[in-house]
Image (cartoon, rainbow over all chains, first blue to last red; front, side, top):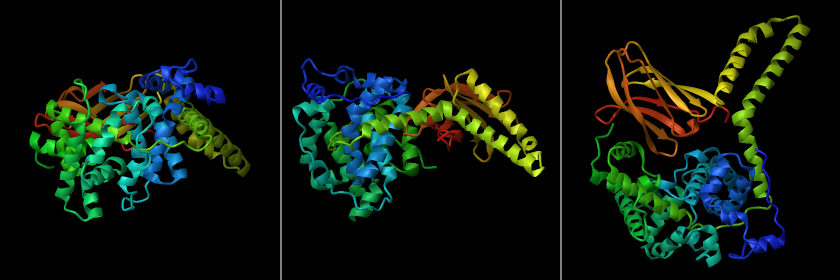
Length: 209
Length: 239
């Protein structure tokens, strides 16, 4: 695949960042699913647009997990390669493209962690790093549903939130969290379950999922 | 193998299944239950959506300068690896073989070319077969029965991708199975029904995913347990 890197002029970048303006880029006009399909079929324009659309979120996640910019870049690159290689396995009934891609990025990052006994970043810090996104970023990232989770997540009891973030972001099993935090396994399982069921009730889940 | 799980137990484990952190036999038993329970599958699916959305709460960061270009450049290498590089590797191999011939002649030992001629013919034949169907590669894995090897699974990455199972003639008892694919990301996909054993020594089916996504092929018996399994340790031989 002959690929291109999109080099936009500063003016174009400004236009691309202004929703509704005449300069809204083509990237905004195609759905995530369409871009992924184009990436999978080897369309160089779609590949460039796909990377441009998701690179900040993918790199942000790999950096959050790995806490090393070089390793995070390597993981983010590998995530896009895997997305391209496995684009045909994406099933829109199972979730969004962003969720699918970030799950790949999360798994790649976890596999790159040198040991499962590492000291993870404080989950509270991870989620407080950015806080609420701007309205424009929320539209760009199409993460309105996720923002619905931010406050409910913040309202969870601290021990539930910590267990959930360790599991969801760092791939810690209940047993590993139990050993890390020195609490009984059953307690950890209950914390994860309670947190997940609480957040599930906050999400609008389509009937056909 | 653990005892079968009921809905209540699976629902207890559903959050861990959805987050991909369930472990071992407990996970296997729950996944077996899910393959036949739409209600529990629905719950895990909804919880998986929660997990997906959570990942999107991670802070976005600008990647290093030039990241996009490096990613796009990197996409060309796997493509070559998948379709062109196997050919290139063969040419490199042939070049190496040719160099070996020169070396052998120089040394007065012309046996190298003769020794590798069979391999080269095989490689050329393999390449020709793949090119017929725009295929990328073949894999094969042993089909394991309850005690011993029961046969072989041949798998093909192409358009479409498929698997073909051959059972050892010594297995005379005929059985009916549901064929499942377990993907590398933990999904269970139904391929179809199969009758194997006795006079029916082969079964084939089309894969709904890339072969590289397939971790295991399972022939599930009427008791809901895998009677035969084949595990693909290698996702892609060119990786």
